[in-house]
Image 1 (cartoon, rainbow, N blue to C red):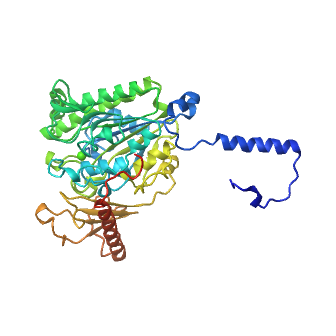
Image 2: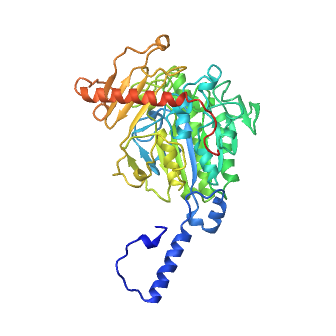
Image 3: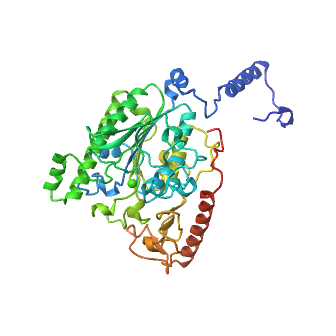
Length: 482
Ligand SMILES: [Ca+2]
């Protein structure tokens, strides 16, 4: 609305005094009734005054090293995941969803910030060897920061793996509550270090996956009256391979080797607990207005043996499809009918999408790499045409190794090169795949599409320069009040 009505040229109109008063009142009401997108700390008051417009709750469930082929639903997988299958059938399922990385910590950084992991400072895995390259820079803003500012109760249950110590602890990064562990150090399923209220103790009287599911249910019970954001970051089916023996035995009896039988048992326990969590939000009457998102952080770990993964090439640690393609379901019964989507979406898109769905203003944030795909959730015919990048190697990034860019049906890959050569630029030629016609990345089409290969190589170089410049930026002081 223009602040100075005298500058507006109006067509000649004739109003009766009565009509004029009505119009003025309507205008005033519109002005006064237009709430800002973000109202600091008022979410409870909002929910009590108008239950139908209460912001949705958000539960983001992440599995660890779960392959797209690990879910039983509809693709011939031998696992038993009835609860996740049901969740999928009630959700919008993405057939072309990608993580932010082929490994754990950077993938989580992308999910938490909506930005490429390199920009956030989280580029590798080993928190002991590379403490400064496995933690979110202090000037990064997490989805928990933003939702907390918007009045949400925020909780992380499970794996963090994006920093340790003062200023880098999840309780310093927007989470009101943290019950979990920081990385993979000494984490077993029957014995694990567990952090709660900044105190770490060793737990050996429960199975980790059951413990996390139980704590997630307790979080939801505690916060049932308020909008909440719960990030349930499971460890399953990450190594070490440990599960209740009676469940392993059933898969062993089906002829699976010990590793695969154990992984499938670990997934089954996780599935059972997620079913209990979903039943709980049903019982509390919260399902209708709770957005439930399920994904995995990266593909299957090759060190645990080979298992069914729909023929996708590569594994965890590689930017081929087997390393970065993940399952993704989004369920919000109040808004979205179940269905399928084939638009490409990635972890950097999750934060802007969730904030969009929660009606939180994105304009106040640092530049995000992702874009909201809320419109795609509403309508299967909406385009979400984006170009997305991945890269990973141990230690400081070397962008000519294990890097990829995807745009529409094409994906350019600079292959994985072993550790010994990582400090030099790779001389391995890049490979172009046409994923529409070759989803398992079996044929190099760079000779068929030389212009595409050249353009995508250039895009990858430009992206590398951009994120590297950001990664090494000097200041770690928060840019905003957060
Ligand atoms: Ca992982």
